[in-house]
Structure formats: structure tokens, C-alpha cells
Length: 341
Image 1 (cartoon, one colour):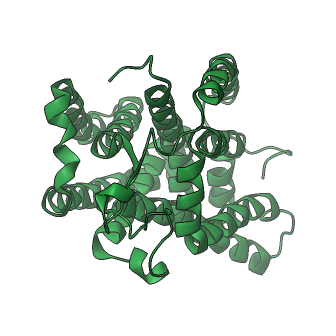
Image 2 (image 1 turned 45 degrees about the horizontal axis):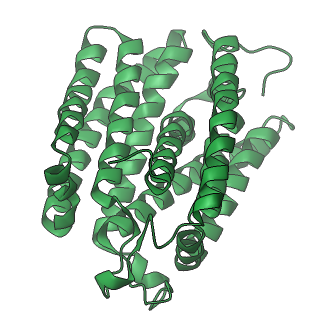
Image 3 (image 1 turned 180 degrees about the horizontal axis):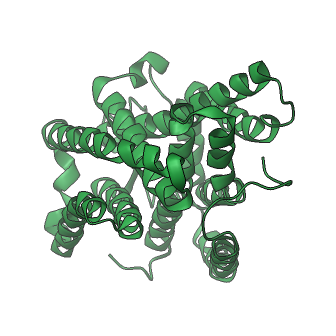
């Protein structure tokens, strides 16, 4: 894999952006999924405020990914957004609904008002993760794309068992990730309640993880092809297994920070393995391999990719610096004050 090749560079950078989004927005989406399980208005406000200063900055990674895909691989962008048109519209409404729920929830003290936005927040968060997971599963298994990159069929062709299983795995992973984050940010009775959720969530994750892994090996045989070309990638497989195994170990030994970092590592490894299964493809056609979209036939011109690389090299340090500063400023346990949600 030659990173000096502009097409490979942009393929890898898209992977980096997806990884950043999956880790950072993954935990606050997981917090949203778990939101209905906490008790009382004060605890729900604490849960909201644990991600309040962070969630919108986390979504910068998604916006950057979308912009990079549009500019670097416009043909893939057009094909995928057309194929997933209805699911992406639902996703857009879920992202909007989640943001509105966070901002509106505490504007009125009426119980009915807050209950509505609590459920809206949880449902929107779950739908975002589920839809991303289903999209990833469809990309892995292949889409019925014709020579023009258009979807042959309708949205029902996207609702297959394997993509839905990947979506369920994504939801459980986000919930586990969110519980590990909440345990770090809370204290007292709320922290104890969150602590009790971690073990059943890890058990559910392990079952889903093993099930989807087996299904992938059976239903998506091309998923391991690149490991013959790049045998060093097996190192990530080992690291992924170690990260998964270290989550319960860290929980058992009372090391919540280590458990959360292990969760971050396993998510990064899963995104890497997804990229390895796809490379160099951006979309697989289940009708004819000749219709596949890859990092070369779906890309912009060399001059565009070259100019964008300089923009990315200049812009990424600002994104990383902003992210680091925000997380440093809002480190520590979550407290409620006059300016809290």
C-alpha cells in the first residue's frame, strides 16, 4: 500500500475520519441509547451534561468525512447517496432530532415535555447508529449497482439479514462504549447504576461480535483477501482480540479509564478491519464486479486530489488541536450548575 499514491492517501484518510467519528461520537451516541435507563430528572440531566460540551464537536468528524468523500471520490459519493437516499434522509432527521432533543429538553420544566425529549434523544441516537451499521453491512456484502452506479431495485433490497446484524452489533458496541464513558464521568448512585450495565452490555457485545464475525467469514468471503496481500494486517486482528479481552479485565480490576481506552481501541480495530475488507473498493456491485467503484475509477483528477491533500495536511492539525483542547477543558466528573442542560 503506497501512501504516496494520492488515491491510496485519500482512501486511508477517509478511514482515519471514520475512525475518529466512530470513537468520539460513538460514546455520546451510546450515552443517548442508555439515556432512558437512568432514573429521575437530575440523573438524566447529568447524563446529558456529560456529553453536552462535546457532542457537536464530535460530529465535525462526520461532516469532514462527507466533504472529503464528495471532493475526493465524487462518483462514489453520488452513487452511495443515491442508493441510500431514503435511509440517509432518515439518518439526517435522526441527527437533527438528536440535536434538538439535547437543546430543547431542559427549556421547560414540565415532566411531559422532558419525557418526550428524553425518548426522542434515545430513539434518534439508536437510529443513527443502527443506520450506519446497516450501511456498513450493505457495503461489505455488496449492493445491486449497475454500470452507471445506480441501485437496481429499491430500499427493500438493503434490508437483508447480514447488514441488519451488523447494525445490531453497532448499536450494542455504542451502548457499551457509552456505558464505559459514563462510568468515567459520573459518581455516586448514578455511577453505581451505570457500573451494573457494563457486564450485560459486554456479554451482549461478545455474542454479537462473534456472530457477525462468523457470518462475515461465511457470507463475505472477500473480507480476508487483503490479508494475503498485507500479512502485517494480522497484527491488528491480534490487537483487536486483546482490546476486546481487556475490557472485562479492566472492569474487573476497577480500571475504568483502561476499559474505556480498550473500547476505543476495539472500535478503531473494527473500522480498520472494515477498511481492509473493502480496500481498494468504495462500493461493491453484487450484479457484476466490473461495476465496482474503487479508489481509482471513482476519484477526482490527480490535480484535485493533490490540492486537497495540502488542504488536509494544513487543516487536520486544527481539528486535532480543537478536539484535544475541548476534552482537556471539560475533563473530570460531570457537575450541574446554572448553565447546565
